[in-house]
Each structure stands twice: as C-alpha cells, then as structure tokens.
Image (tube, rainbow, N blue to C red; front, side):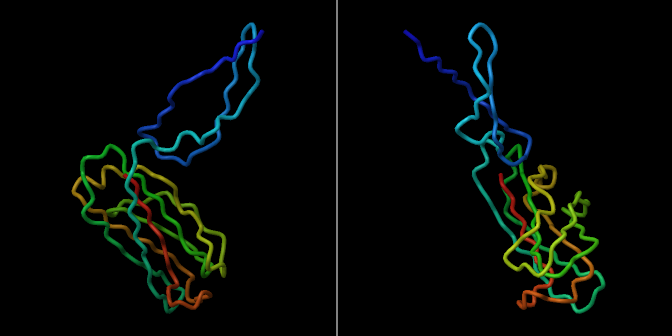
Length: 166
C-alpha cells in the first residue's frame, strides 16, 4: 500500500513589494518528489488590503517637457508597507519619462510604445514608499517629453495611473 504525503507550510512576504509568481518545490531523499508547481501564486505582499488609485493627466502643446501632478491624501500612517506602481498610457512616443514621489526621483523603465490607447506601459512596479506616507499624503509627479501628438484624441497627452496598496 502507499501513503499519501502532504506538505503544508505558510510562505509570507510581508515587506518586499513584488508581483506574485509561480513557485515550484521539490524534495530529495529516499523517495524523491519531482519539481511540482504550487496551486497558488506566491510572493505577493501579504496583509495589503487597501488599494488607492490616482490618474495624473495633462495636455501638452509641444514636444517640450510635459508635467502632471497628483496628491494622494488621507493615507493611514500605521502600515509597514506602502507599495506604489506607476503605469503610463501608450499615447505619444514619450521620451525622458521621469516620476517623483514627494520630490524623490524614482527609477523608471522607459516606455517603448505609442498609439495604443488601451495599453499602459509599467514605469515601475510595487516600490515600497513607506517613508513618504508618514505624514498621511504623497505628492506624485510625472514628466515626459515628445508628447505633442495626442494619438488617443482625449486631450490627455500625458496620462499616468498611480496605484498605491497598503
């Protein structure tokens, strides 16, 4: 007869913002278990139950720098992790994209898309900005150049979607 072996454990990620991912497990020994994928996604941030979004938009009239600013207010100050993500609409072929949080420059992945109005390019994903939430608000600024052409036709040459989880 054979006996079913069941492994059970908790894998929590309480502090490092990151996207969930597939995780595999294997075991060696007298009766090895081949690599097997978990049924659920792992490494998402545990304990985050509130999401706030802010849409930062502005019209640009030439290819010079175009800037929009948004403030997130009434943020609770008692959470250990505040994970921020920024996504930019693929409207014009933006160059020199920059994002600041309370004046601090964020490391940004430059978008390589244009004229795809229903597509958003991720500028950065789930960065812990806890030090900026201490006073209950956060000033978010996005800037880009080369956005004089509004392919989407909504008048929002620069459109950035900020998502904050805490």
